[in-house]
Length: 417
Ligand SMILES: *Cc1c(COP(=O)(O)O)cnc(C)c1O
Image (cartoon, rainbow, N blue to C red):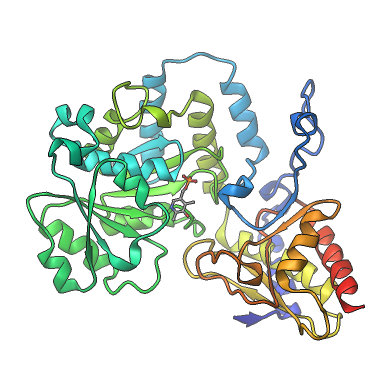
């Protein structure tokens, strides 16, 4: 953890500006005025939107599409196309831009995981497509995984009727391959696995088995979109609706051409497939293509400087309150952007971090803090604790940092009474 240096923040911020990066374009003001003719259905349904001081969490509807992506989606929605033509063209375009052989737009990273598994089970055996889940049909179905890489998305692999073979050491991994092995699975943001990425890929390839990496939440840096395929992973999944800021229900499966083709055959719009229920429409496909174009125009250093500046503005509003300290924290792999961590003395401010979170949620406007606040559902590498508030600043819209800071000031004030 690094403590905030005001000078450092301002220096970086001004460098970004001096470098010609226009923050206004980088972070376009988002639809606070509804498009002409639009009905505010959130209001009509009685659902109150909030200021997202959390991050790209699925349950909090993840990210907001930049204006140019929203415009591309609205445009695409007006024109019928042949879905197969669109999928193929989008895949080729994305593969070119993302420096890999093949790409497929999926309905989220979770669907990309399922389709990757289905591709590995059915490659070279098209008749197997209709016979997934594999276990019931006696198909090859073993997926090797490190014990520490089991996670909330295991189900996306098991859906295909796959069976996990757990390993811990490199030696166990070497010996785990059988004629039933179809894939090896790597969770990119996992902590504590003993086998690193390079070894994981090398050993799989020695056995002629494709290697999959789930990097769903692992941009920025932007280059991660090709780092793992270039490292040799045969298939890599990203969420389209997190850092890339495409439609929430999209994902990317990137990798070797033959495997991407096999994944496609297991996908919608083909009917008798595991992927048929994971349909992406023209709006999602175009939305993700536009989001990738948008994302590739961004700059890692400028984004980081902007997030640090937002964190600093919030920190300044709370730092004068007795016992309150603010620091910047950057998680190592997933959500690898500056977060603001605010700690305080529970004897001075008599509210637990979860209570602060609840007050922020119930206030006007509603504000959602990062879920690891107060040691809540731990999200990859973020610090927690009964007196630790985590503010995810990267999804804030312009001006919202001030609102979050002032509201935190108020809530701390109530707790200090
Ligand atoms: C968010 C996430 C997913 C699921 O992504 P969706 O796009 O919501 O389907 C899968 N794996 C990891 C590691 C994630 O963080």
